[in-house]
Length: 180
Image (cartoon, rainbow, N blue to C red; front, side):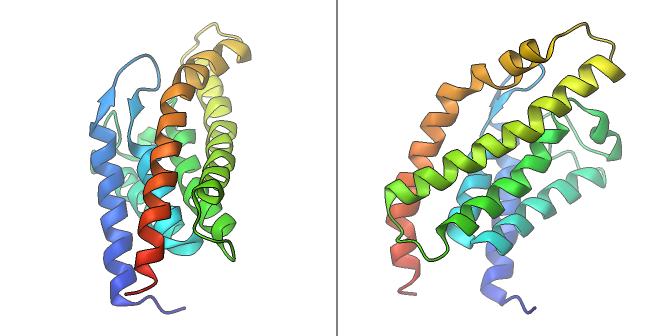
């Protein structure tokens, strides 16, 4: 598989944008509100499944080698951080949005549907990871329902706004990209 110079630049750009998105955050508990998921959705929407997921994989890889690009730092030990499952979810998220859009018109509703599916999958990876790390590693007394509340429910209004934003932007940008 060959990657064009253009795609390499865009992959690197979205890895960098996701890192920047980690620092645009509001701390509210074990998982802060950030723009990482916005950029992982945009990566999949604009770059497609393979390149979008690769951009997010590079982002996670950069953090794991020790560059502090995650919301609370970096390094391999971040695997034991309660939010690491969400980071893995961003890779899947970008892939799912890109895959969902294959063969579909670049319409708001299609990006919206793909983004909702991808976001649900991020939570399906992130919340159980959060629960396991907090309860089994950190010794926090917490139910799975409580983990769902602190790791998902509080983020849904903001995620809905991000999904709408991504869907609107992608529906405007993607048709123009095909003309380049």
